[in-house]
Length: 125
Image 1: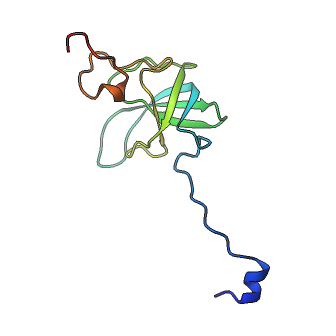
Image 2 (image 1 turned 135 degrees about the horizontal axis):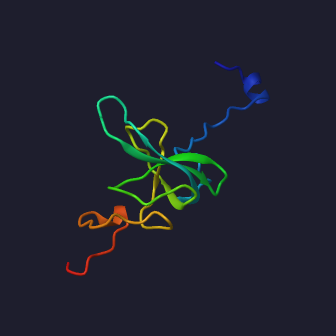
Image 3 (image 1 turned 90 degrees about the vertical axis):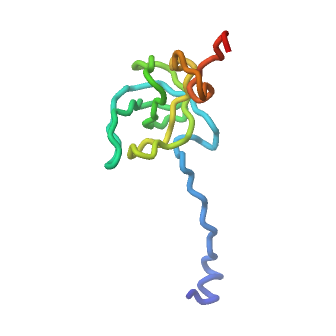
């Protein structure tokens, strides 16, 4: 327990809330350039080949972002829009790429939950 004189000399500080997405400077999205596209394997109980991109953001930070959906068109030096949202079974991946924006096209022939995968509404629906 601090004495009154110690508190007067050095007042107590309120703890600051740490950001879960440190690559952004308090903004919801960030534009970035893809440096490398690679495949990562998830943690223990899961098994898959997850597609991940290393991206240099407009905020000058370099982050790993998950590419959701089946198949993608992203290549090195392609432009992507990145949002927050971690991929729970991939360590160190705290971001997701937004499909259907810039060089990362939407998932083809997608019928359900199209907004997540950047697919337009088909004509026959």
